[in-house]
Image (cartoon, rainbow, N blue to C red):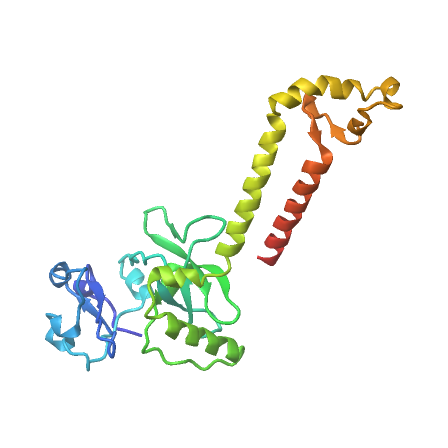
Length: 273
C-alpha cells in the first residue's frame, strides 16, 4: 500500500505517460508542469520537471490507494478515458484482464456518470477467446501497458493467455481499429436494425395503401360475398387471401410471411447475442 495522503502533495496533480516505447511509465506532474504539457505532442520522462522521476530508468512513484484518500476527506475523481481505449480491469478472484471501451449495444453509450458528473462506470468488451462484455466501475479500470507481466492464472489459463496476446496486438492500433474487433455488438445490432427498418416500411405500406388498392378494394371485397364466390372471376380474392384490418386490405401471402420470417431472424440474432 502506498503512502498516506497526509498533505496536499497529491491533490490537483496529473498523471502523464511517457511515450518512449521501451518505457511507457506514468509520471505524476504538478499543476504547473501539467499545464505546460502540449497534448498534441509526445511527452517523455526527460521532460519531467521533477528530477527524481525525469529518467525512463526510474520506476513509477508510489501512489496511495483510493480508500486512503477517502479516509482523509479527499475525493478521487477519474478522468474520462476515450472510446476505443485499451484498458486493464481489476477483477475479483481473477487476474487483471485487458479489454476495450466500446458502446453498450442497447444503451448506445460506453460511460456513465454519477450525480456530480464524474465518471462512474465503463462498458467494456473483454478480450480473449471468446470475448465477453460488462459494465465496470471506473475505480477498477486503467490503461493497459506493455510492461504488464502475466499474472498467475489458476483457471481458464488458455483464455487468459489469448486475452493478453490480443491486447499486445491491439496496443499499437488506433481507437477506430480496436472498435472494429468489438464483435459482440456491431454486427448483430446493425443487422437487427436493418430488419426492423424493413418491418417498419412494410407496416407503413399496410397503413397507407396505394390509390389503386383504394379504388379496387370495394370491387374486390364485394366479390367475396357468398353469392359471388361460385364461378366468379374474382374468386382469387377470397377472404382467406385478403385481410381487412380496420378497413385496410393487404395480401396475407405477401406481408405476413415476410414479417414472420424477419421476426424469427431477429429472435435468432438476439438469442445469439
